[in-house]
Length: 234
Image: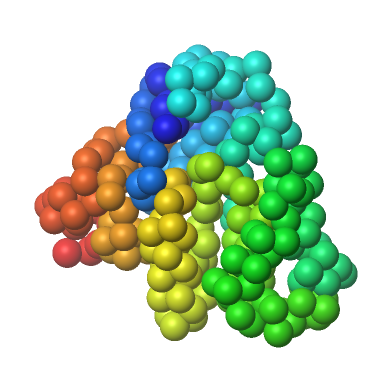
């Protein structure tokens, strides 16, 4: 579904990714884990077109996206939920959601998708006229995920979706990702909760200082002694 080949990415003279290659299979959850500043968010930004790699390619079902700008990648089905949610706080929940359906492909299915989002997150239906900025942190994250779903993604990228949330909401977000994936959505997940991310993921990779150092099935990596020592404190 989605392939990164030999990606080198920079911020000015600072190299953030070194020869990163990975493959996200259709209908699967792929988790990227690692310490802060490991290059996880940069990887998502390369896929979405917000960072242009100096070397390497991003392929969507074999199509090279090198010359495809970020806004057109959304229309192709690559949609990112950014870290920090980035809602429009002085617009209502419903307005934020409907903004996600801005492409012609998404507009055609807008009402159907909105019903699906409200089914996933009933609290958003209850608060659809409420200003997004007045929601709790967990509700804002639900709204951000819902807005991304409104774009009818083929690959949904989630950047730290549980950051700063209470444990009960963390569990709810992971359950939502599981549900979305069971409905056929391909998910690329960046997550600081390593144990839960690897439990959920079909495959995963570990980034360290911009280098891909481990990859494999999520359950396999969860039992890897190097990962346990480095990230789980075991």
